[in-house]
Image 1 (cartoon, rainbow, N blue to C red):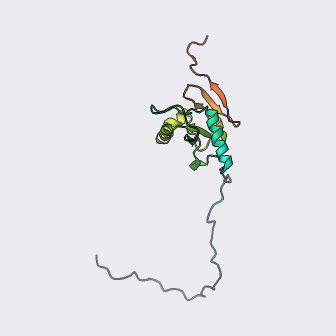
Image 2 (tube, rainbow, N blue to C red; image 1 turned 120 degrees about the vertical axis):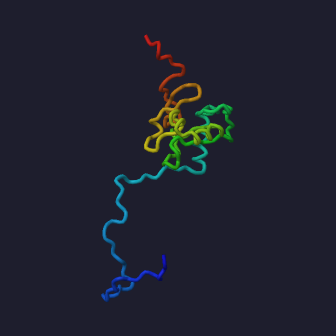
Image 3 (cartoon, rainbow, N blue to C red; image 1 turned 60 degrees about the vertical axis):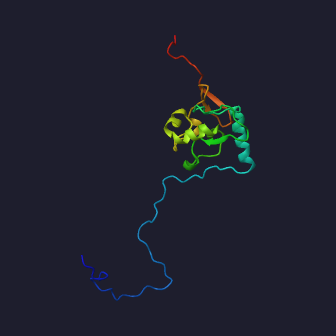
Length: 167
C-alpha cells in the first residue's frame, strides 16, 4: 500500500461566522445522567475514635481470632498486633462500625482475601449491597451469630445443635 500523504478534505470549510472569542460552546443533551439514588459517603473514623473502635472489636472477640479459618491460626491475638478486618470491604463502601469489624490473625486475614467465596459463606465478607448487621457470622467455636451495633453477639444458632433428632 502506497502512502500519498495526509488525507484530504472532500468538502471545503464553510465561510460562516467565526466563533466568538470567550463564548462557551453549547452541548446538546445531558453529558452525565443523574443517579437514581444519591451516593452516601461512608463512615470513616480517624484518630482516637478509630483506635477506640479497634480496641472494642478486640475486646468483643475476647482476644481470640474471630475467623479460625486456617490451620496456621494461633487462636490467641495480641492486643497491639491483631488485624482489623471490615466484613463489608472498604472498597465497596464498608463503614467503620462495630457490626462491620472483626479481629483476625494475619493468617486468617490473608485467607479471607484470597478465598472470598468461602469467606462469604462463613459471613467473614458481606456482599457489597448488604448491611453487615443483617448477615450471620460463623465463629470458630461453631456458634452462628450476628454482630450487633452495641458491639455484642446476637446468637442465631448455638454450637453443636443436633437438628436431626428433634422430637
